[in-house]
Length: 189
Image 1 (spheres, rainbow, N blue to C red):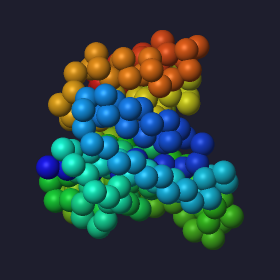
Image 2 (image 1 turned 90 degrees about the horizontal axis):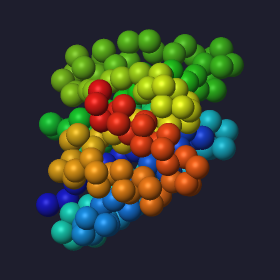
Image 3 (image 1 turned 45 degrees about the vertical axis):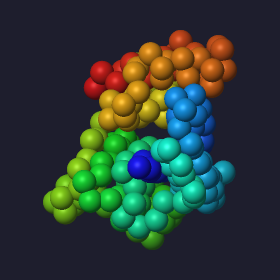
Image 4 (image 1 turned 90 degrees about the vertical axis):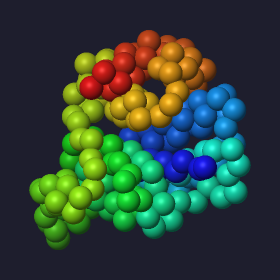
């Protein structure tokens, strides 16, 4: 059996570090892991998507329509954008932060305020939280990625201690303690 996780966000939010952490953790646990990063205009605040698939044997890193067990979203509009990739019974874990895309910034469009309510009304299972506030509580707004990994960790059959060890092995030493705190805040939420 293969588990498929999409990590989606806006450039500069740390989705690539999250996928690196997840890939290392799963490889260390003995799974066959495939990771594929798809960069949009990430340097300009555009959409960034990473696919992480793991299991006994994984043949492709790509996750198609209706195939994701989990979508971890760093921004709520990105959750809506990629919701079609979620399989029936899958879960979206999303930060409630709003980051206006370029059409909203230029005034050509308005941000869809009720986007998460619309997904819930369609029967999508969503875990939504203010990961930005928790990241700030941990010591840095940039730790949203690790807060969200803490939330995801509760749904995967891997002990929290193993995640903390992966953080130690993935994150720069000066940021380890802050990231461990961010993980704990997400895990405890």
